[in-house]
Length: 343
Ligand code: KG4
Ligand code: ZN
Image: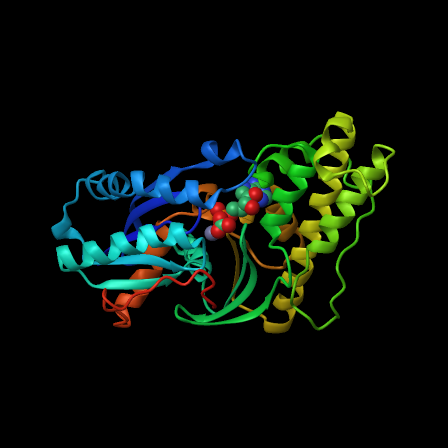
């Protein structure tokens, strides 16, 4: 069964064709990173306009690239939320229209849950029960899957998402957007023990995360490092920091953020004893997070390639296949976007 996946929840316009939830024929991603980098973050209006321009050519390429035609497509899966409202609308309106015009069943997909499905597109498939740490710019969730569509939320961030913390720290340090890769790069030349930063303590049984205290601690540390007090605006710090201070703060922040994530992942592993563990979402592209997970967890880890960790439509198509198998098609006339769609 060939499913066309469509993804426009944030700043990537993406389409992909996947067979039976495991075999990827195409994974086309038109990234807007260069457009938004000038603003230091995603500008929702700009993102929506760019999706309008790129959506149809991206879908066309996803189908014709591997030599397929519309007749080969058995269903359409689209991200209905969570994400930026204007961005989501472009993908959902396109998918609804195509489902009607091409007479294909339509499947409504939760972006956050779908991130985990990237791990079924690699050679080593995870088995159930499956523990997933899904961490990106918009969310940080620990999920336990008993089966493909039988999952529950074990814990989540109470404030900032992990990727959001990377992005905000990058801004304070004057490093380019997106913050995850640029903080990771600076950290390579920094001392992770140069600054002692706090890990949120939410109680020993909690599987929730918190990153806002860490972000504030980075701000105070950077202000102190340049000899200023807390009144110095965050936008004026970077120019006063020495390159080594930037690298040291980046390394100290990254170490603390990664430990925060891996502490909870390990705690959930010990509690639920899953057969497999995966990490998913943009932050799962972090080499530092991967190294820490492999070191701390007594389970063999297999990581999806970077382009399947960050936003893509192959993960949407992979999850769409399981919606198709479970006969979960939705009526195109009824499908609505939900920018804060829950798990
Ligand atoms: O999943 P994703 O592409 O989009 C959302 O659904 O949010 O994740 C984007 C986030 C950004 O915050 C970015 O800084 C972070 O993932 N990210 C990384 C890395 N690559 C992307 N964080 C840490 N290390 C990376 N190498
Ligand atoms: Zn995402």
